[in-house]
Amino acid sequence: MSHVPHELAEEFPDLAQRISELKQSDRRFAHLAEKYHAVNREVHRAESSVQPVDELEEVRLRKERAALKDELYALLTH
Image (tube, rainbow, N blue to C red; front, side, top):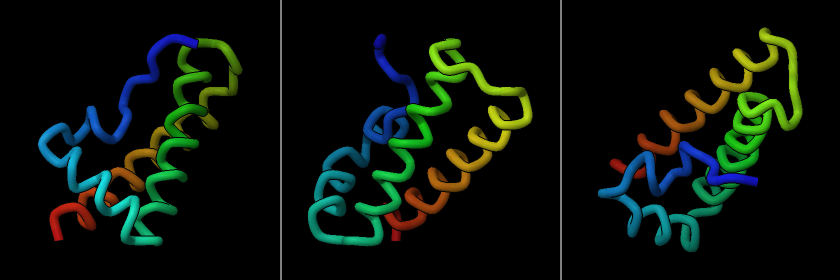
């Protein structure tokens, strides 16, 4: 599979070290980061037609990814 866009370290390059630290030290952050990663992969597979889904499902996945990203950012900057 090609490079998957929207990985956390790419979304927040200035916070890459903090992402790594929180994945190790904060269970909630680690869980949310793993969930973000899984949803991001689903979005990528849908967008690249590797695993097509209907339009509503793709929109739902994108909204879920955005909500997770917002929650992760709040934890990163807290």
